[in-house]
Amino acid sequence: MTRRQTALCALYALIAVAAFAGTAAQLKPYLALGLVQGTVHFWQDTLLNAASRFITVDIMFVFVVVWRWMLTEARRLKMGGYGWYLPASLLIAFSATLPVFMIHREIARSRLSTVEQEDTGLLGGVSVLLVCAVALGYTWRAAMLAS
Image 1 (cartoon, one colour):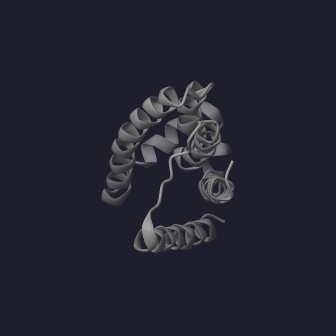
Image 2 (tube, helix red, strand yellow):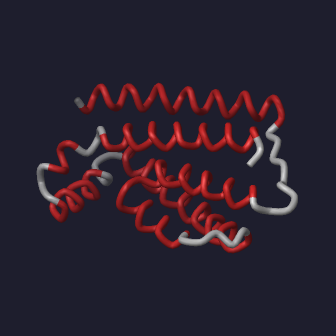
């Protein structure tokens, strides 16, 4: 694996940890209800107001597109064990599972005879950092509100 791929994997790992911590922090009221009732109550709460409905619908359709891409990419790269990403996305958090898939993808890409270079360019890299900063800020605020 190249140094660039190793750094990318480290970034994906940090994103996965932050996403897991941020989503898990929101689950406290649901965990006390047990698995079934907590899950039912969680999904009922996604329908409470326009903002929660908007973001849930938005994420569901993003998930549909990204899931299809994940399947085709896993098959293209001959990645084993990719089937577990669907239940993990649904039962844990898609935001934590996708970066783990991306690590798996980088490992698979490193085994190719010629590694495709993906370059976002300077503006792309800055935009990724900006989006990451906004996501971390929002996650921190949400975690504080949940505690």
